[in-house]
Length: 330
Image (cartoon, rainbow, N blue to C red; front, side, top):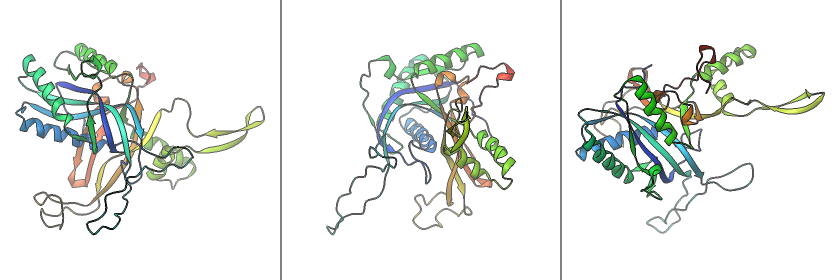
């Protein structure tokens, strides 16, 4: 397993408004775009920057902070459905089929980890403005970026955090950046929770698998305890205070076929790149306040592909604080 790549600056594009983004993050999850979509935005922005003459920057990782969302679903009731749109009629005048698509409106901040060489102050200001302009014309998880409400206000202006100084300077820069991202929730990875729950499940059910552990953490189980409070029964949930806002998320793709030579698979999108059939990989994430992060690597997601093992996934280096080591609790 790799670690977060080195970087010299954090580029923060705060409070972006995205309309009609894809709310279906994978075959089994919905409610927020997949983290793979944001790594795709980072790679697309880097290509656009090079085409625009900004070739002194390397984009290494991306962080996501959500400030608000509105999933387009029906109101009321326990079971909800996506609000769907009917497509125009076919060329022969017949009614087109409705394809179920989940949509969501978002307000989020993107944090890009950059490596820059010979980036003086004059160039920085111009390049940051150019990158913000390029992103405004792109799609984010299939959604359109809307103009900011008040671009002259400080909270809506893009900014840089410099990480070329000493440890104290870097901590101060990251702390200031996190405070400017409040209020909001940052998405971090919690892969270790699956192993912890698997150990608990196998204590009673030795045949339990990681899928069982993932499902157990993805839902809330209720049981009736007849002697919970002085002999009076009550319903007890599997989630406890302090467990955190843990959610199931897709983190990449796993191969289900061999790697086929470029151009050998019919109807492939790119005939110049080797082709492989894949399926979604799932793990767990947690939404936490940016002010609870201790270092930038805990916020950032980066690509960690291993074609030899058939794994193409995103990783995050978040680790909860260890109270026994004297670290502040998260």
